[in-house]
Amino acid sequence: MRKARDYDAELKALGDKAKALKARKVQQLGELVAATGADALDIETLAGALLDAASSKDAGAREAWRAKGSAFFQRRGRKAGKSAADNGGE
Image (cartoon, rainbow, N blue to C red):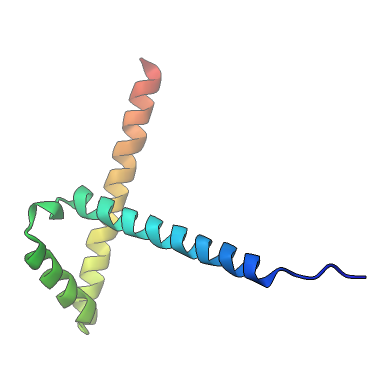
């Protein structure tokens, strides 16, 4: 005979996983704001800029933002890799 599935436990586990993923996303967004220096902006300015970016239909502007963001992450990746290599050699 088959063992009965505990749907309540499975739903709770899925809910816990969803909460953890959301918390991780929020933390990463906060880290991104700090890493870009946007934490120096007042909250209203930052919110306004994000709202404009999210509602923008201008494909050219979105592509320019994407390219700028990609370059930002590539620079940060090289800096992190370089500092790790420097620390290993000392």
